[in-house]
Image (spheres, rainbow, N blue to C red):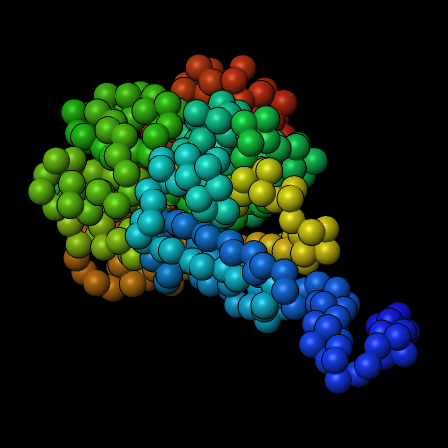
Length: 347
Ligand code: LMR
């Protein structure tokens, strides 16, 4: 209506032929004002991570991209960079703070520079199973903990599940004694360091992308990871023995640059939050499925001997590793440990 009035005024005041250019320019300008979305710059979200696309996290990232394309196409574009193509996990958090990438989902074990509290998730034999882990992350305490890195500019958007870790080497690992003197790759976590030192092994912090070669060339003797990572990164091909230890968990924090996130238009941010909550639920299912399917693939390959522990063997690992808790309980919060134990009791 406003546009029409303006045009009429212009045409009345001026000879139409003489002012045709002015009228055309006015129409274009009014059109742009009427629909800002048509000229607003597309928001690009770069999502960098370290696993392959055929993993719970890889699938989650692709699903996020798909749903954003469907619901926010033209306004928001997601670019996914899997398999450490763009950054490893140490560099990605620096890149995130510089807003060179806008989404990442490193393991909670890799945030010690930004919060000491997430070390909770590394305590050996703390979480009974993935259900107990989900129970805790969904709880008020778990949700409060997700905010632990905010004061450093990193905003936690959600927890993404991977699952229970298993342990492998080129020798059977049946009791803690078997690990003595062996070099194990760990993620950059002091709890994981203490966990391997508790069984007189030598932990070595190393980037995920380097593990396969380090195992293949004997730079390290063993590793711990989930079935999906053992399968997708082919660790089982260079480890003669893998033990079903379920001694720890691998959980991710889907994180963004806090300032970037807060700068998004509210309607877009709300739609992205909604998409994230849908994708997070799917990632849980991808992870639970992968734990079964990938373990079977590894077992069927015949390339590594899979060992199941008896209760008494498992208790020996628990007895050797659990004292590590005492070193970290003040840092991670005794109340958080208690909350996990409550979840264990229910699951
Ligand atoms: C690892 O470094 O072993 C894992 O954090 C990799 C991953 O992202 O699953």
